Image 1 (cartoon, rainbow, N blue to C red):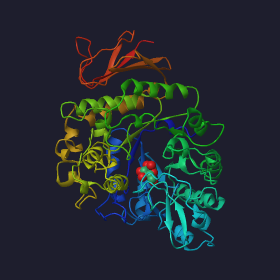
Image 2 (tube, helix red, strand yellow):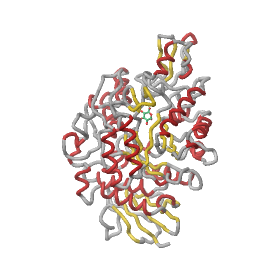
Image 3 (cartoon, helix red, strand yellow):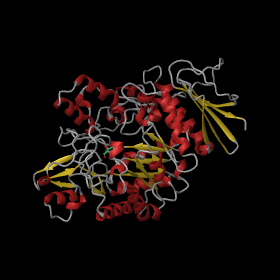
Image 4 (cartoon, protein in one colour):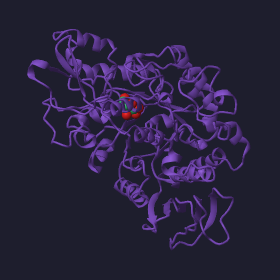
Length: 547
Ligand code: GLC
């Protein structure tokens, strides 16, 4: 692993992921984040101490970025080759790293490979995708995450066969079992690595390998994605091949979405001797929060379990949000006005004082919260809209469905970043593809720049502390006062240094029994500790302890 990989603080930005719904749905169009504009975003990134940009898919796509039509072309809605080259060189000039999102579990149904594949059973590209000839009867059920009927096999009358799509109908799954497909995809990676990018995110990759004998899954468990669809044997072999063909030949970092079903899977992914990936990106933590909140003790246990499993070997991503989640502060903190800023700062303290590589989703550094759109027509995300249709068609409880959308839709996390108080939060002169969060007048970069207590300014202090103290990156982690129902307390220790972190996850005063002397107060989100020694609502404190 290249030495910079573990201490970059990544900022995730998804420029095209949200262009609009699928064509099978009502078409929604609006302006997106063009690449030349992203150049301006880099100043913001540098200003808060980030040093890497993880860019969502920017290849030509039929709709929302995750259905690629041409892996070698920048989507014209975003810019052109020259814009991309100048983004890369501009970033490198400023010492920033760029990671691209490779959507390789599936392509678009408008990709030339799929057009060919679809056209006849004898076409040389037929085997680039998974087909089931209809004279064999119906294929064994497979669940689709985004399909209106949640059926992953779509019948195509042209050749009287079904094709497989774990995501939407416009995202047919590529056949990784075909060596020719793998070669094409490695060549694509080389093409971008030759352009000088610094790494790859592999989208939905844990689903890429398939058992093509298509066994039936146990009844009632057919939709258990983690158990039956992820990390099918073959996947590690493909990653090792990808490593030989691509990663080992370039100074790049690699991370795949998902870390399998078990700690063993996750370990295997990033075990240096196996030569697969650099960073394991596990969902156990981020998945804890649901419609009714989350279990705080379980939260502490999950992060403690993962840390201890990786304490000697391997490296983890630290994150609580991304473009597939509602907003961090709304899920794990408290986005009501009196608590939004403090709880967001407290969560940022967690992300930047844990061992691993932090992935910060754009806007979380500002404490951006859920938009809670109350009209179905304000939503854009294919998953959200297809689920809405599914509920309509199956007589679902539409009130509850809307409630779930408001709390959980990915669109909550996808509204444009809030730059200032001008129209559309300073998005651009055009109309964004989705409405901005109405709270942009109170929460935006311009206001936060001026407020010394803002989320943004606190975030800066945190990244500075982390960047200057490698103990916060590499040091050991030890949880304290484990059963405390309100406070997450832990110690980071290494190189003769010790940091104590105290985080009150509740809206009430609380205290922790750590058994530690209090040490020197280094940073917190309340202008110094309270004289009575209590932690105030959502207070975060970091102490440097004596050796
Ligand atoms: C991944 C992406 C998500 C996308 C899906 C299908 O889960 O993170 O945004 O919709 O893959 O490509």
